[in-house]
Amino acid sequence: MAGSARNDPYKVFNFIVEIDGIAAAGFTECSGLSTTTDVIEYREGNERGGTRKLPGLTKFNNIVLKRGMTRSRDLWNWRKTVIDGAVERKSGVIVLLADDHTPVGRFRFRNGWPAKWEGPALNAKSSEVAIESLEIAHEGLDVEFE
Image (tube, rainbow, N blue to C red; front, side, top):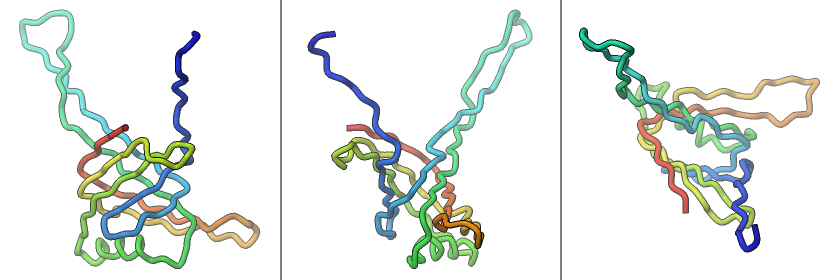
């Protein structure tokens, strides 16, 4: 089509993560940006031919962040608050960037806390980067695109 502008998709490797009280961090992977709503099937006694489908409980999957391990203990210290019984809930945003590194979209989560931290798999025969993983349970996800 002549004169139509291309609408290319954004690339998945170009993002940053910002969490309240923790500096913006570079992560190699972010997954779990999803939400589901249970389906409740309902049928009255005099109805024939099937059931009605009603929305039930809405759930937000845990967000999983992975990055190369560094000297920074910010993520571990946040996880340690949960282990010690004093949960610190934080909100955060995953910012999707365009090729020129300008923000084009945001995935905002609220009331998050670290449900799981996983250290690297150590192997003397490998030359891979040591990766740490943080799983964040949260209570809501909003998606914004500019």
